[in-house]
Length: 81
Image (tube, rainbow, N blue to C red; front, side, top):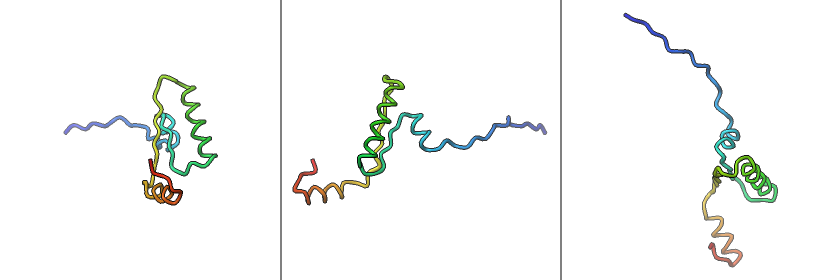
């Protein structure tokens, strides 16, 4: 019987979510667009473009859906378009 051993790999903790998103040039929007959030998102876009203007930047929007938008639009007398 032959025994063999696998090379030992150094276990590393997974990267935190913010680092992973930044490394992959993903801007994450998961809350309402209040002025402070808007400023942070814009700053992240500008910085990522400054780093490499040739690489794409992705925007991920975590939305609860359009129900709130429809209710808000109806209340304001506007269309959802």
